[in-house]
Amino acid sequence: MPTTTPRGALPLTATLLTASVALYMALVAFGNITDFGTNQDFVRHVLAMDTTFKDDDLMWRAITNEGVQDAAYVAIIVWETAAALVLAYGTWLWTRPDHARARRVSTYGLLMVMLLFGAGFMAIGGEWFAMWQSEDWNGLDAALRVFVLSGVVLLVNHLPVQQGGRSGHRPD
Image (cartoon, rainbow, N blue to C red; front, side, top):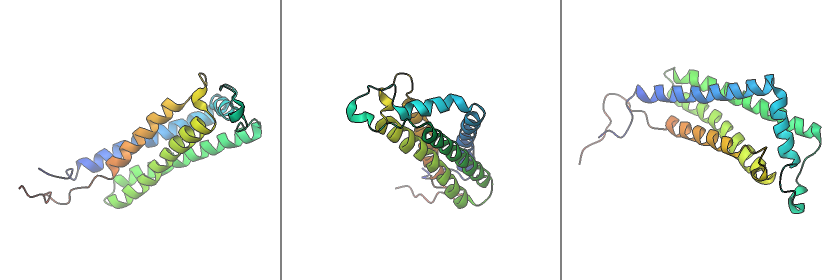
């Protein structure tokens, strides 16, 4: 039984999955740019912690300065845009013969997405700013979906590619 994926199937799979995350991130960034106010409100409410339980032991963490809130939102949009561009480049590289470079660039883009949704939205937004307490401004489920999707694509990108016509596996 072969231990690696056939040469043509894995690069095609990596290309299409990387392209899917690139498209998703491009659409997220585009939506945030063209409909700036919708998620601006989301970021403001999360950082202000104004829909949490308002526990005095946590409320000192709140950021209520709108300039700082908006700067954080713009930084998120810049990060999303950069991740989309890196993933688009990684997608293009998967169509080329240099799969090691495609894997490397795609890994950088996927890690950018995982850092944003894992460290940014789940850890900082969810825990530090207690987003989990809000019924109205809670993006943890969506963040988890994107984090898991990106992780699966990252794993697929790192599966070994079969070289030549044989897998090198010997039956026992």
